[in-house]
Length: 438
Image 1 (spheres, one colour):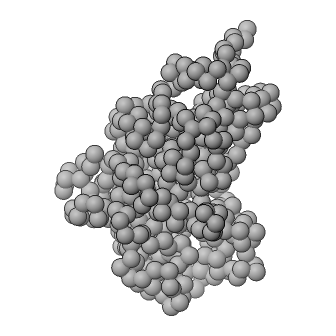
Image 2 (cartoon, rainbow, N blue to C red; image 1 turned 45 degrees about the horizontal axis):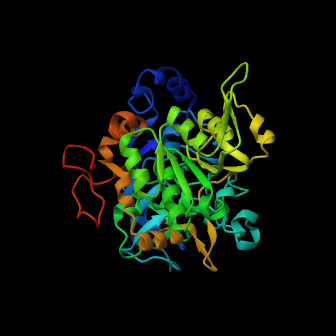
Image 3 (cartoon, rainbow, N blue to C red; image 1 turned 60 degrees about the vertical axis):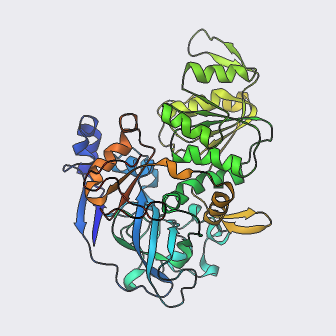
């Protein structure tokens, strides 16, 4: 099968962190550790596993951070390479192994890429506390080899499909997944919405576990699918307070309003004005940036995770406010934590998804997300701005990394270059053009 493979190496790190600043060839091009390769087909699935054909897979900001070696090395022990990237996966079941009951051949499925103790082959009694609670995103043994694996050998260490040497991700034609990772798409959910189930579920998970105070001001920082998904999740779960969204570009403003933002501001002057409108008063220290007291936002969802976004969150939060961290913040060179203690702020981080308490039941976030999509009828498909065939992966990565130029929101790779029925199947833009389907 064809697949895009990435390997982590010291030369690759040095290349990306030096020449990568001046040319994309060092991070996405021929000088990088990224290659289109022919890999063995997955073969017949073992008991509890399924073989899938990929319909489409998104490019995530964490993928770009990994390819450019710009993420923190703290998570390196919880991955294994070489790997086929891609964890925002929409696929069709081709074949199931003995004992699989969650999905049947022909089913379209959203794939939960998290590798739980169950996927590693551990019994419930031997599973870690997080996995027993249905929160495998914080699995305690992700850095260990599995008890059993695909092909009879031990499953390598790793937290998710897409960063795992034994379980290829969605940037290829086919893959294997454990049945616990499969969530069939419900009728009425298009493939363009289906390929967004994973990033949308991140927002849903955070909103369900850190709901904002009703009738308070909420700020959402970010202009990607997780930020828009958070806005949508707030409205879909019934939040009626004011939502201020901070985006950078006109088309992003339109999407933020489509999904429920009351006000959209740009970073800088407009964001400051929105803060002052909450009743905040500005003061100027002898040295440094102005600070504010009074007013502020009761809850801030930081969907960027950069030094500037976290600094802003700390300064814009009101007394005893809460900052919900969804962006993959890593090593930050300079961070002033004064307001963390001076305003008695709370910071909560969330990763991926898992078992939720939802309407009196325990449901996986992917199931809740699908239910909310059908209830709201929200046009989340509009987030998919660019679709490219696998052969054009370098162009796709460039579009995802240069959103100001490309106006990309979500870039998707698909194994086929043939158009598929709109609304039912994912397909690329005009055949042979590699263009976006905006």
